[in-house]
Length: 121
Image (cartoon, rainbow, N blue to C red; front, side):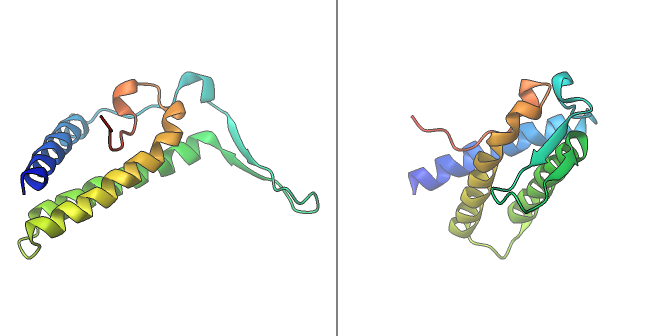
């Protein structure tokens, strides 16, 4: 039970810090080197067509995923029908999702805006 309580406290601290950052209304900006850049998805099959996506559009979609995860966290925290163990389990999935999104941290201008997954000791 100690692990669950420590995890819950750490996750709530993380959520609070993220909420405070987002509540300040600061815009998350793409790194300058990627302004007006293009993401090119090139299939292995040379007969298939490449897909080009404006990096700023792609970046906004990533920010949208992050915002949706934040709302999900808030809904989990405020749900009175979920047991603490269930909340912890769901938060673990969200943390893993943040970890998967760290691949895209290169796109962020500011380090404070980057994704953080679970940290190991």
